[in-house]
Length: 424
Image (cartoon, rainbow, N blue to C red; front, side, top):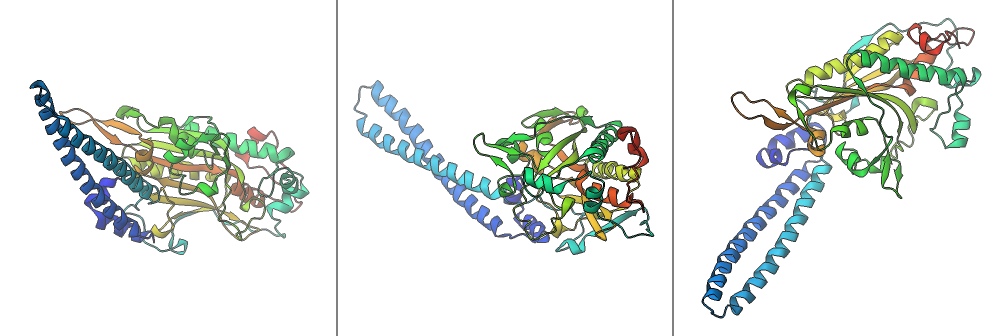
């Protein structure tokens, strides 16, 4: 959530940044108009309260002298009723401004390349060489069915389309991937957490997932709980409403969860197999750090995510998202895309985002910043998140890249101690 003071004090800056994101900037003028009304109301209310305080003293003096104060009391009753009405209107205006803020995205960092769409994202790194095959490459669906390791048809029977079923060595390979990723990130200083996958409304709001994206979420109305779209949500909320110590930062977490997304706006997109699913597995990385260190920590997180693909010897690239393609909460974002040999295209497998203080402001996560020669200052910290990684599209790339002419899958060497087998 943006700082309302920034909009009040520098609306032109906010408008320009929103234009870079292709956002409608009318909301800023709506907020300023509501702010004007709010300030006028505050002024009127304060004037009435001053009058009430003054007259209350007069009434007290009259009563002390045994004088009749009934007329003044009657007048102040009306003033009190008016103040109560104005306070209620003021509360409604505050809620109106807050609701505006819920739908305004994070402002892009100055270093983010300008662009109107994903076509203008910037490729910053390509790792590895494309493999060449002397046989017709099978896609992950055919491989999964032939080897009896993936069963999308039965997954559909059980839950509906977009809910995969892993079988046999397919389940073992998925589990091996997750354990390998967790162990790798733990070795780099992340603390493992195992979080709930159902969260309350306050947690979803703090992570900026609702109200903006509520229709994309699986919702349990009887308990007012949401199935998480990513472990970012519960991990961010570990420190909701807390003030941390500067010496504790950065705090780095990694956690594996199932993730659930209705993706109500995705109809018509490629939904084959793992290309678009409603339930998937992911190891999430979250970093709570100071503003001074956040962009440095972003690059470290990006490298941590890439190290998984390097170890698996997967062909991938890193792109920096332009201003027009940034996610709602991100001020800067990198996507990591893996190569699908059967689809002959890049598939997004991870995003690494710097949300600056955008989520921390909503979640009220702060820290005591040391001030030389003075008392520590309480400030909002910065929150970074990244997939380290999501397994679904990674599995597509892994299966396709490691297939043999006999139709088998060679398990990447780094996974073999986890799988207990080297060939599927």
